[in-house]
Image (cartoon, rainbow, N blue to C red; front, side, top):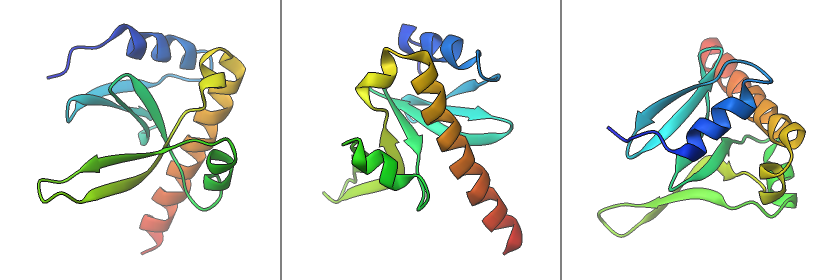
Length: 116
């Protein structure tokens, strides 16, 4: 199990100004959830937030990189998560705005799954 880092503790403290957020160890990093919805992940001390067709253009316009990982077969896989813009690490309100956008994306995904 990954030991919580100062970065994860700091994120939880900052995001608590918005709503309670839970960090759970997973795959050597942490998953972030709120209201029972998984909306972010921390890998190598970098926060990645859930993106979909609605908010992905905002991440792309901000020059954010997608979360990717390599498989044992040498392929690179990109998930629907994008790195938080660096500017949001210095501005609590901006961090919360990005997190809210990611939680909205997680909510939309959950509603789509429910309809199926």
